[in-house]
Length: 278
Image (cartoon, rainbow, N blue to C red; front, side, top):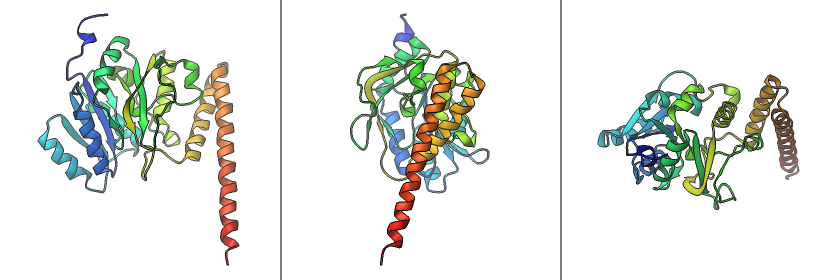
């Protein structure tokens, strides 16, 4: 395929940043999006009722750069899924790229990914560098993500995703169900896979992924495991003849049980230590 799709012009991508009480890190995320060598059309910051100085801070940035759009949610379901959906309603670009408010992009991200998404019309993601050290995925080679891998673990870092807006909206957007809190992105990728959407992960790290420090968007490990177990159990019940669904349901249940038991043992150990102190 050749032509404009191979060399997208600036103004093709809407960047979506959900935020809640992280004014300083959100500013860094915005700056990394605006510093792209292929500039975005807009950066939509959707604020889920922050109580810190997020509103005046981001509003001031928006007043100085017309590419920044500040949207504040004041009602409805709380959480990143609902917040991203609200921003999707505002997005004017053909493609949308997601960036969490405590992550950052490297400056070549959109230049490298946008031609790929224009050609494939599917989901394009990449590896990332962890703030705690090393890369998120150990393998450095890019590849099309096979459907079976989708059921083994979440192979996609949300802050590296770029995708046609129409693909997301046609799938119904992110789930806003409380039982999927913390894994709403994973649930969406599975739904897209159900619909035959191709997913390609570039091997080069194109983002800085924050996996250290307080206030992460992710829920505690046990809560995420339990949410995944419930999700796969429901999917398996709906598609009982799908072996991938059944294996994923059993595997995720075992992981959740192991983590829950480990948590119980750790809690008993802490209580025993406390009781034995003089």
